[in-house]
Image (tube, rainbow, N blue to C red):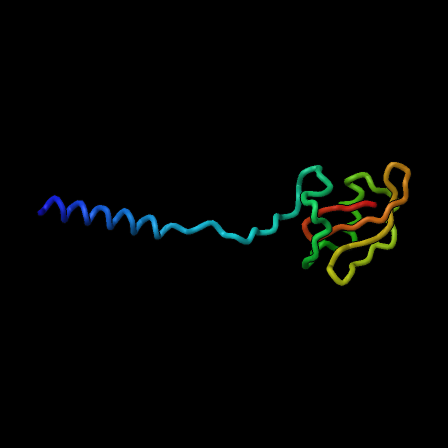
Length: 105
């Protein structure tokens, strides 16, 4: 009888520990600003969100990735910096989101 009680006690403790573990979150946390040489980290770019880049910082980031003659940078209603620039000799519309993603078309 004592062995049965000990076994039941150990099984109860093991099951309790398993239930105490946290399940993985189903909502992903947005990544921080990219520090790599990738222009865009997500196919959903540009991503709307509170953009903390100043106009000067946005321009510098675009230039870092090969865009020149950056003009008309304005922040839209989704806090995405938008403007015009040149890349590889072509004029393109550019967008920079709060994650640092750059989209040039």
